Image 1 (cartoon, rainbow, N blue to C red):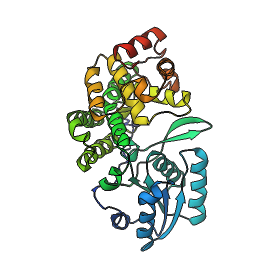
Image 2: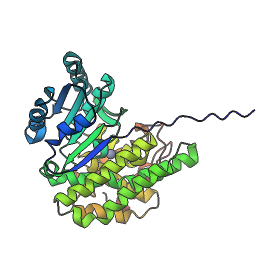
Image 3: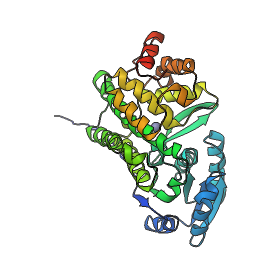
Image 4: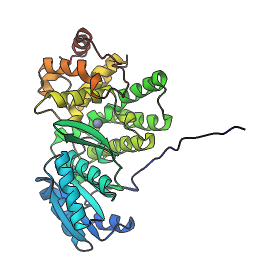
Length: 353
Ligand code: ZN
């Protein structure tokens, strides 16, 4: 007799995604629709507290028992500190009002506590606003940890628009990286037999292509620009949820960015580094890297070491060590990585150094 054993593939997705204006008031309705418990914990940063954090806390206080906490950075200590507040306060759910690090801390703390969290991004600079992965610094090293995606994403375009334009341009870099991330994923599928989802890959690629087509709208930095970038970032997050891994939106260009993070005291924005990494890895894949660079240029995102504020020597070091960051993630860099000569050549040809 045949026995067919199929591995269960779990897809966890946000239940609500709101994209619009003046959504602070809406947080109550979202929580009600999702049937979230009585006790809420609002996380914000020192700056995002004033931008929307305190307003969200005040609005929720009308209906819920609310505590607020100022998070100082995406570190394991902060995750543990939030976790102890969750336990002391017996919080039923969390809402993160902020950029990358606040959302990452909420994501991991809520996962560890086994309670849901809502993502209320104040920037559109990376796809972590809707994904299940949290980027946390632990013992000096930044690592990407698997958690769960937010139960809801509330993206207020007016709030996001108040962030410096640089963040939106960085968001473009994080979306455009889907192009090479998917190529790396296909490579790993063919060479290592890794699971591959055509559906997730298509969704991820579509976001990158839409961003490339809309570069001229995005550069205006208006509310429509924010909408375009946020939609693409959320689709990337959803693609990762469908895949059950960050594969559709994270390949060698992300390893390069992680390598830079570990080499630098003050790295550039995640999306900025990843965008430059995409130019180089697109070249390595034999893709039309000029189009990647053109899009980044058009939206005003960095396209070389100088604009990133990074020494060429450090950039080359990151290229030659990127493959060691996460050895199980097979990419175009292969098992042995780039030689110094190859890294220099790729960086020079693409105008990155
Ligand atoms: Zn990213």
